[in-house]
Image (tube, rainbow, N blue to C red; front, side, top):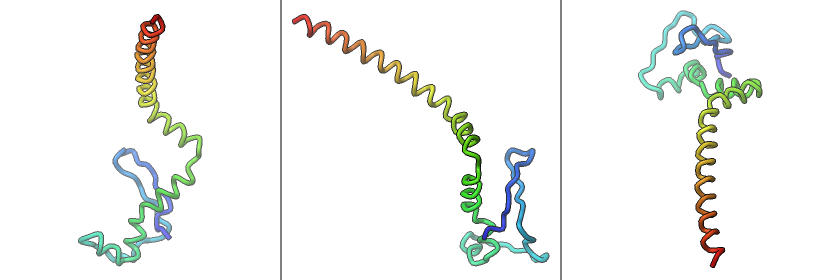
Length: 106
């Protein structure tokens, strides 16, 4: 079970605050030189199990907010796709009209 119960935003956009379910240690510090060493410690393993926290947050995120977030990010890209589609459609239509004009009169 993950030790992180919640992640809160802070005024600093590059930092977040982790709210824990229980105290981490009883005053004993831990240090790991590599990710492999941390995997053998249950506390470190559960602390850095960010995937399950992210998965849980996404599953509990309101669908309306998620949709508005995705649309706000994708809006510009969708507009570019729309404009290029219109341009390509126009040029293909012109080519077809010219082709029809020359081949229909023969």
